[in-house]
Amino acid sequence: MSVVQSVDNMALLPAYLAAGTVVLVLLADLLVGRAGATVAVACAGVVATGVGAVAVGAAGTRRTFCVGTDCSWVFDGRAALVAGVFALLTLGVLGLSGPLLRGGPTPVGEYCFLLACSMTGGVVLGAAGDLITLIVALETLTLPLYVLVGLRRGSLASAEAAVTFFVVSVVATTVTLLGAALLYAATGGLHLGRLGGLLADAPDVPLVPAAVALVVLGLAFKVAAVPFHAWVPATYDGAPLPVAAYLSTASKLGGVVALLAVVQRALPAEVTGPVLALLAVLTMTVGNLVALRQRRTVRLLAWSSVAQAGYILAPLGVLASAAGRADDVRAGAYAAAVAYAVFFVVVELAAFAALVALRPAGADGGAVADLSGVARRRPWAGAAFALALVGLAGLPPGLAGLFAKVTVVRAVLDGGAGWLAVVVALNAVIGLAYYLRLAATLYADPTPLPAGPTRAAESTAAGQPVAPGVLTGRVAWPVSVALAGATALAVVIGFAPQLVLDLASR
Image 1 (cartoon, rainbow, N blue to C red):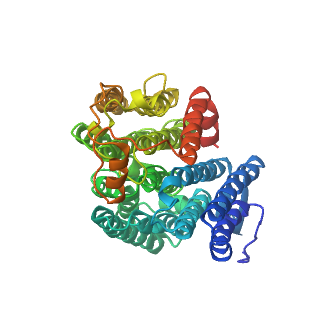
Image 2 (cartoon, rainbow, N blue to C red; image 1 turned 90 degrees about the horizontal axis):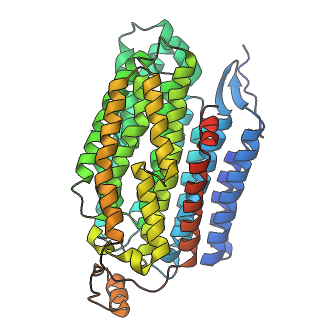
Image 3 (cartoon, one colour; image 1 turned 30 degrees about the vertical axis):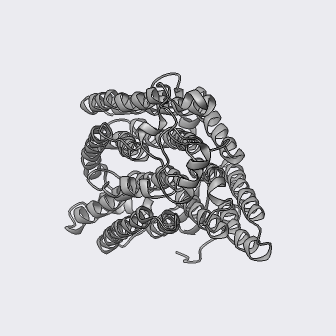
């Protein structure tokens, strides 16, 4: 067998465009030195990456870096969907970052550079065909976020969040790498497709159960599955709001894609299925119950995102019970997990975009009480936030969230795990309490304004908390565009959920 690897540059085009965006952002910041030009270059590169991914994915599956039938890069419809979603999320977060970057202490060049680096990791992650490429791509996605979380200078909470995120992520990466090393020691293979066959032929090797457990648990940290979730609330709440939005969407999507890749193509379903079912039940239950007690907005959204991770894992929990069923049942479970992740990140981005629009520029998420009656003063942003919350709860008219939960329940029932479908339904009911409570708060009787806009702006600039109900000026146009785009996309995919499912099943 020849060990010379073929190279298909067309298959690598999305990665080239993403990496090229990183280089161009650096050059624009160095040679032009204007914040607007740097952000414009970053946005253009992100759009080009998304368009390139869709164009390559529409042409069919392309493979490169292959030795025999084992390929390290497989760009198909699902990889194109993942790359396109990462590009959309990055573009949305750049829009939400407008007030943070304009005239503030945050360095524009470094900020855009780090976001582009993270997007590059996400693009590569969707097409990874072996464990090394997968782990490197996941770390390329995650490493820039350590710095982005701590960019709010002078904020102790931001520094603590960055350190917490760094320490936990390093531990998770170490555990995953140890599991990958043990898998290689037991099988001699690293390509995901090849690993699946080798593990099926050698189930009695003593290292295999430990290796599988380490890989799954290491990736569970990235997904923020219980009991590996403790870093989420403090990290989200301490990060700048746009960065928290990226963490809650792109970072979680990366963990889901990585976990799905190893579970679907490499690890034995009879081992991973029960573990993922247990993680799903713990994650959705703990996330929903703790979210009921939250009084800070970002912490509430953080705990709700933990619960949402449980819904994403639920279809994967039926893999063991579906092992003896038709192949389309297991394929439906994988597609349901990907589709739910896509539905979730779009609606979650809309929720964070609305929160950025409703809060003073540069402020954190504040307390839930700070949003009392805010929709009466800013009806469009308030309505978008309420629609996103209803979507996350899985109620109409938030059709994207409704179809997402229906997709998960249907996949779980098809897999023969009726008890897990009951747990999903019960947790969805629990989630209604805090989602609807927050939505009702937006339209509650507004509290009297204890300070004028000038005093609020001075408090924000000084790093002091803004008094409840205080709004400062109009919403910046980049935030308005990002909010409108995220809301419109959530509405569109709510009316065309089958399109997402079809792409996820490819």
